[in-house]
Amino acid sequence: MNIHLSKTWALFLVLILCLLPLGESVHAQDEEPGGPVYIVQDGDTLWDIAQRFGVPWEELARANDISDPGQLSAGDELIIPGIEDSGGILVTTPVPFGESLRSLTRRYQLTAETIIRLNHLTSPAELYRGFNLVLPEKNQAEIPVDRLALAGGDSLIELALRKGVNPWQFVVNNSLPGSWGAIPGDVLLLTDEESADGPGSLPGEIAALTITPDPLVQGKTSLIQLVSQDAQKIEGRLADYSLNFFESGDGKFSALQGIHALTLPGLYPLVITGELANGVPFGFSQSIFVASGDYSYSSLQVPEETIDPEVTGPEDELWTALAEPVTPERLWEGVFQSPVAPSPCGFTDSFGNRRSYNGSPYNFFHTGLDFCYNYNNEVNEIYAPAAGVVIFAGPLVVRGNAVMIDHGLGIYSGYMHQAEILVEEGEKVEVGQVIGIVGGTGRVNGPHLHLEIWAGGVQVDPLDWLETEFP
Image 1: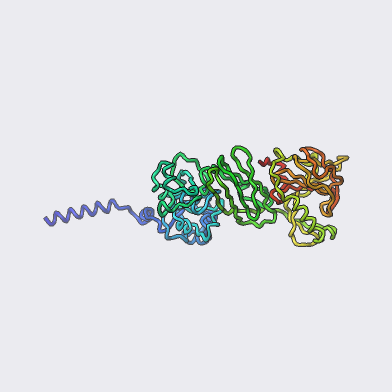
Image 2 (image 1 turned 120 degrees about the horizontal axis):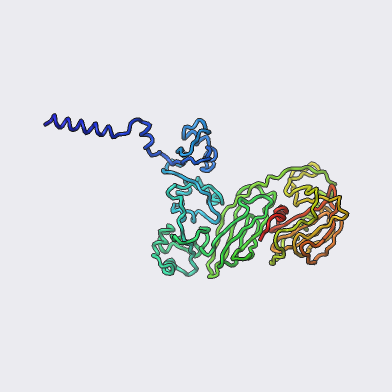
């Protein structure tokens, strides 16, 4: 009997050993990684992955025993150092426009603490548009949601009754302490497979929120658009500038704001507030990245009196003040036309180039676009590129004979160094109307037309307005 049992146990042990995987390498493939991992995708480099997860590439290489960064292959699993207490597979996704830490926690069903830890955040302001948000793979899919905001005097129970759902759904979806935890204006997310996507920090009545270009660029015109059939009283700020929203059709509210050419690249706050037709307030704040315009540098020699602060200061203040008011009506249509006839010599200087005058630091920039003087033409006429009203026409020391036209909605155009001015202040002009003659008055090295475009009190690249139709 004992012999029989011994044989039975021996056969059982042999069977178990046969079923076990052979070799340590096979066993290692079945082990779960000790920390969070990222699965390498086609086209990934070690440097790209390190940037995406906010860790030094050298540290990423050490954590994964990588001696040759060029040997990464799609499908490789990389341990991400610095967040070892979080297991599982990690992915990254850009933070959309119109999101905040609170809306992201609700959209991805994660706690704020988890998002902060995974992304090494020290401030919610770091969740700027385009920030590479690190998420567990199981939470990467955005949950289709309906975005609802409580009106003043309303309760979560009343809102739930109107939506025909259990109030507990709001509590669970939004990590509230209870039905009493919602406050007026707070945007609550409710799982709804039929809901359209939209900015999570704003109620569902705001269908879309966009910003162009993305990222913003020094010296460019930024366009912020909000789409809603129910919004009113929309206001905003971008960095230090107030945004002036106007209705541009099809439920779109648009604001055109220049980014100063000397703005340092980096993050700047964008704030939008407003009120829905039913009186519910809305608003959000998000950091927006401003990128370099990659402008060139040039050094110029000019008469000393034309860079004397006692002369340039008052003239600059006058010129800037002219472009500050915002006429509520839009006076132009379509793309701005060229202010001069086509010429084989084209432009003599572009917008934004950093300048040094008589050996000064490069604290100046070229505020417009220079059109060459066409010596083949008997008369070089200047044409209004768009309809508007002349608000200045006269001589200045630096700008020479100059004209400024108001096109409405905070958009202005300026024309400098004219030989002759052919319009008067207060005159309404149409696109293509002759307003002056190209010349060489003021601070110049030769005859040409200097064209400026102002948007929201800031000089911007005129070439964009000659190529792009703004709303």
